[in-house]
Image (cartoon, rainbow, N blue to C red; front, side, top):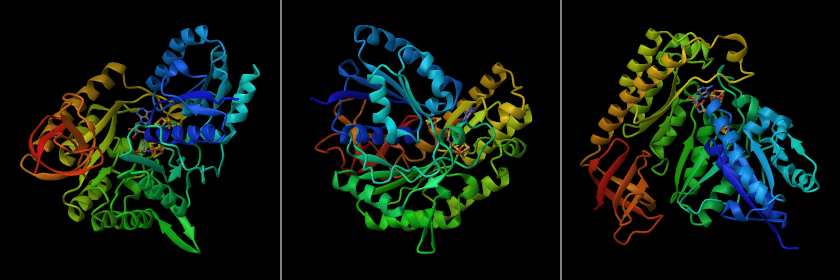
Length: 441
Ligand code: SAH
Ligand code: SF4
Ligand code: F3S
């Protein structure tokens, strides 16, 4: 029998991108399914979903609504919801008439059985959390056309229970993967032509493995990855400020192929709010970590996540956030407004008492401040030369390429004879708030 065709749409964070590759590998290795590039030709459609904010879930409901037409025209197509929203809502998703498969992030090894049930007109759901599943020994199929930059998960789940956050409930307890398996995956990427790998985890700094009674920490893993793959760039995300150690910062400084970029989500500039968030650090600790990074790696860029309007946030807390943003001079920031997530500590025990318009107003102030800071940061790069890893054709002009610096800034430059995957030295001549513009030298 010819294999059936499947299509996966991925929402949410990079971990979902990596997980979609795991699911694709499981499907394709069965010989029963083959990946296809357009949704219209698919016999099986999977949405790999995110629950981080209410809006993320709204988007999935909207998507399911507009897949109804497709299902009407082809009633045999199987539609499944997987990922964090599947974990959070479980069989409630089956109330939607077009959904017949639901699988949580720890249940992808069971996906073929679930799909078989659905093919026999049964609704199939598995959202059983696991304490051990890390999808070891599954070398992921790469779905993206790009063969320049890839992802490898190093931990799954999260134990931090920040009071606003749904992730510990959708992804379960933190587990680290065997370093040798991680290394094998990086080498596999390298042998497939990849030039860059991003090590993924909700809190990479708490990566921990015991090797013959010896501790193996995140900085040991960074070193292992960097030493064994000197021709590859190594990135990692996300770092939690509470666990950002000097040893890690020194390891980043020591290896030229470890990118000089740290994504260090601060969430708020107010120590009172940070405490309510259960972030386990205060404003001073965060500032101390930034100072340590600047001291040990002067050329390092620092980016962050922040959100406005957490429970009880007052104007003075908000001002502390703005003043921290000014002080830290983040090169870039992802900014949000608080969205209460059912089941979290905050939803159960704190009051979502900042009015929507105040959340929005504060968010807008943060965005406009950060826009100025990002522009200033980019302007300060004019005249400097950076090694850029070429990733693709610029969206605006097809005679230009784009790539990223070690600091993770996007650079566009004339294509000439360069190809994707080339390392090119580019001198920066101009910039916008989001992009550096230059010429190869
Ligand atoms: N593990 C990472 C973050 C993962 S979620 C860390 O600890 O930093 C990505 C970002 O979404 C978070 O950093 C936070 O800024 C934001 N976020 C998480 N829950 C949220 C919520 N309930 N409302 C608004 N933003 C939220
Ligand atoms: Fe969520 Fe906090 Fe874990 Fe990040 S560290 S995933 S914000 S609980
Ligand atoms: Fe979203 Fe789950 Fe990632 S909630 S941000 S897809 S871990």
